[in-house]
Length: 196
Image 1 (cartoon, rainbow, N blue to C red):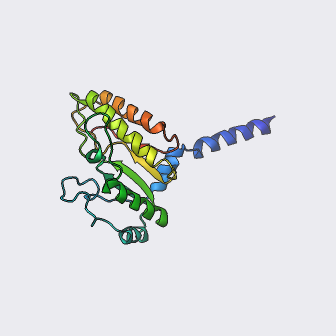
Image 2: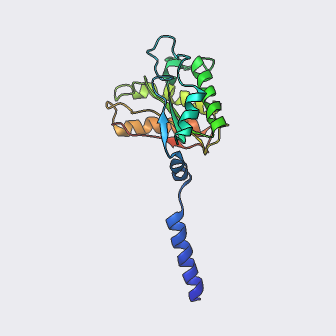
Image 3: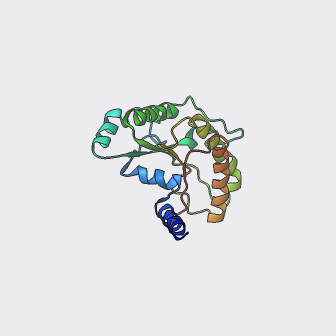
């Protein structure tokens, strides 16, 4: 009896000490990372998104330097209509370039964070008017990329949410978007950050 009790205690301690959620394991697997900024989120550049951004060779050099994960900021707001039904131009070069980076990451066995970056302007006075557009965008993006390996590909809801929205309101917006993603994939981790 004492042996069984001792075994149960040891197993419990072991499980408690070493068990991690899937999200924690995936986060640990990010290890060293690189942010590919001023390319696919830079809607202010002429010829957005410019074709002369990063290359597969650049990602190979990053991998050779010990990088395990890539964070790719994207300007999804720039390809999402501002009026209902919030059509998203999935034929836009933004998606072509994202698909190319996904291919490179698959070839090089790199993790990828698909980061929804600029130009959402969600504030206290307008979040109720923006929530459906924001959630619809995530519904389309998550449906398009639900096939990606959830252990290596992650969605980031919004880079640095605005100061001008209360955290309680932001939580409502994010929960709505998460519900939209979960209609298409329950497997992918989602990065959510508070307003700063």
